[in-house]
Length: 227
Ligand SMILES: C[S@@+](CC[C@H](N)C(=O)[O-])C[C@H]1O[C@@H](n2cnc3c(N)ncnc32)[C@H](O)[C@@H]1O
Image (cartoon, rainbow, N blue to C red; front, side, top):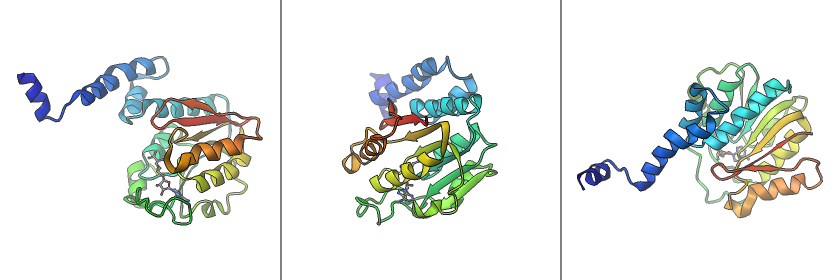
């Protein structure tokens, strides 16, 4: 009883205990064959070890398979994923696309969606720390791709949440991703905005040789490698 009260006073409920056990034991166990203890800690700290672990392995493959090209993240918010990507491959350009002030009203289903406004370019660059090779593209996507038509990519993380920018990102980056390059799409299993992300990807890949592979991360990412 005393222990139960002690835990309750500290806000530790059953869910919290499950989370602690998961982070301290289970995720370290399944990450062990792939990562050093230091890398494992960095991945576990993110709170979504499946997603971040998959990104880390993809970057390793890009380096090992010598897939040339830059990296990009579409939908940055406060830069958690951006920093993780940049820390793993700091010698390549990483393009960051976001309004840095939340959704743009030109995209559908954004009228009452006020999330992701509490950020700024300064916040993200401070958070990333080492900004060598970080290229910020602030504004409405796809307008912010202007001038990048000749750029080539090895890795693209698409995390815009909404249908139009997701479709526009697939259109822009697919043509510019080198063979063997990775395209990640977050929220594939998220029903938000009438399954915006899965609709965009399924329509896009319908007439392409690549097919998505799903991973059981938070909100379900889909991944494909460019043929
Ligand atoms: C889910 S958040 C990104 C989270 C981030 N990838 C992470 O892992 O922390 C989605 C972001 O997409 C941005 N966004 C959505 N539509 C956009 C558009 N058309 N142009 C630019 N940014 C957009 C929003 O401003 C928001 O910051």
